[in-house]
Amino acid sequence: MNPTHAYQVEQTLPHFDQDSITADVCVVGGGMAGLFAAVSAARLGASVVLIHDRPVLGGNASSEIRMHICGAHGRNNKETGLIEEVQLENAFRNPTLNYSIWDSILYGKAAFTPGVKLLLNTTCTGGTMDGPRLDTITAWGMTTQIQHTIRATLFIDCSGDSVLAPLSKAKVRIGREAREEFNEDIQPESADDRTMGNSLLVQLRESDSPQTFNPPKWAYKFLNPTDLPNRSVGQRGDNFWWLELGGLNNTLRDADVIRDELMKVGYGVIDYIKNHHPQKDQHANWGVEWIGSLPGKRENRRYVGDHVLTQNDVRDGGQFKDIVAYGGWSMDDHHPAGLLYPGRPTIFHKAPSPYGIPFRAMYSVNVPNLLCAGRNISATHAAMSSTRVMGTTSLMGQAVGTAAALCVKHACEPRDIYERHLDELQQTLMEHDQWLPGLSRTINALTRDAKLVATGNPETLRDGQDRPVGDVAYGWVGAPGETIQIELAQDTFVGGVRLVLDSNLNDHKRMPSTIPLKGNHARMPEKMLRNFRVEVRQADDTWRVVHREVDNHQRLVRVPVSARTSAVRLVLESTWGTAPATIFSLDLLESVPNRYAPTDGARWADVVAKVPAKDLAAPESLAEESSGRTRGGA
Ligand SMILES: Cc1cc2nc3c(=O)[nH]c(=O)nc-3n(C[C@H](O)[C@H](O)[C@H](O)COP(=O)(O)OP(=O)(O)OC[C@H]3O[C@@H](n4cnc5c(N)ncnc54)[C@H](O)[C@@H]3O)c2cc1C
Image (tube, rainbow, N blue to C red; front, side):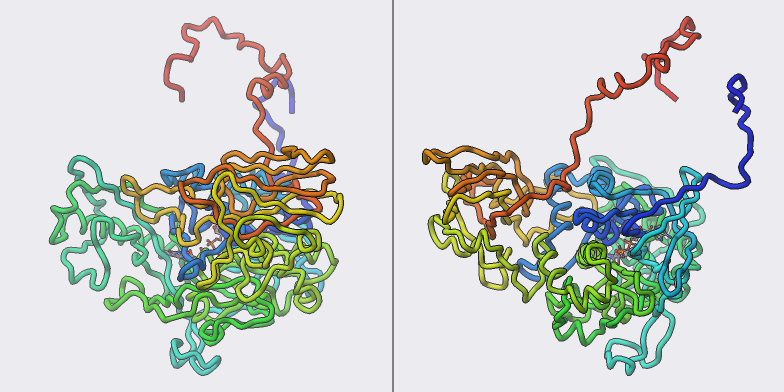
């Protein structure tokens, strides 16, 4: 570049800027599954690149699509681990359930987890193989115009669309299996390529005065109730998930054609609610808050893994020795014609809750270094109609991220984890608060050999169960002021304390798919410990505070102790409500990982102080008439 002619940049490059990245793990797609795959792998020490083709994370749960996260039905069956961590952070930071703040919480998890390199607005466009293994992928930075080449030991496809399949020749399935292939009675007689459709969502909001709505000319005309049979069209219209089309087409290749149709449908349905509905007067004060521009996808390519999860596996409760996640949503099988079909838009076929999902459904049968999580795992159409919900896909993401980190640790492939390191995978997941129904977390020797002193039955704090299961409470209850004392046989170094608290697994804590009404706010769980302290006993029998936690808002809490001592005690100070605290587990740890918390943002004044003074010189044209401080900017 000629310094005296800054506007003339010489075009010496025959192509866009190139950039090469090498990492242990590359995750493609930053929906809930991909986000948690990346964060869990990095927390366990792997170097991770997460590429995501949108500006905000969360996929169908993001502000761009706004589906609320569903999961396993039933009392106390709510998903924990990373999904509960972000939902609790959201309840704490975002009580009015604002979508931009929700986006920022997901962004913060990816962008500020040490070990994760986050590439937003970056889309995977190609790949190269090294024999049967995926070697590199290429990705295009839409905002940076950089062509990235990413080499990784392991790839995790969380794109929903299985974008790495055509690049790697990984085996996939699409559409509905014939009933007889896996003996699934909810499947059609003959196999076909039909899928569930894509949907655009709408949010309406009630205001204090009448709201008019003039539809665009191109909107479809819905004029009376017979035009929308079997659809719940009210002023809130629930979340309009039934604005669905595309299952008769190809939901990938035809995605933009489907979107165009959905735009006409979406605006047409609002026109119907506002201007043609028989009870339109009841909707007078309702107006459009938001209408999506990016349809959510439900179904297309699914990987084939070492196991294909079927309807019968789901119905049998998923009794797998390699359970690493669980589902519990009904088999929610939408009609492929979507809104074109006048009958009920979906059939909820019963599924038990919870049912196990095996690790063998989460890696490719023929590409040895390729894992997957999300709606694209190895499952039939019927099983996938249940596993696709995002509480479940979140668990899968944490499972494959954890597995990938163990692959790095043992220098092995995903199938080896199944064959040789399954117990370590399952124990690591439970250690990080992922519930695996039917399994117990192993209690470490430091905790097991200690003596617990507290009111009631403190043994429940080390029974390996970190939540209520069925009718069994598995929790210790104590009021503020009470203590739990852990007596050690002799002076021992204690690195930290791990607690699992009661975050109320019957409160869904979801972002809404409708607009929250007045008073419809997230609240912190009332039995969860808010303030507490950890103390160690000193040689003179006095107690020293080693950690005080204020405004704790997490269920899984690990705090440092870093002391040699003969006893540790937890002192309960307060909960988020008036109820006593419930604590499911208390473990002593040899060390506390420090890779979890982002560092605090710097003071802006310190940021400015680092800029060279010459770059902060006043403009030479400062003498002009207005400083720009008082006018609106452009
Ligand atoms: C309208 C609708 C209603 C639904 N209702 C619910 C509900 O109420 N509750 C619920 O839990 N689930 C619901 N589902 C199902 C659920 O949302 C999906 O199954 C779920 O999003 C799947 O999660 P995922 O992480 O696999 O994919 P996604 O959420 O789709 O995330 C994958 C991400 O990968 C990105 N990506 C794709 N290709 C590339 C590429 N080449 N490079 C980089 N990034 C890429 C995409 O942009 C996307 O954001 C609904 C789905 C739809 C469409």
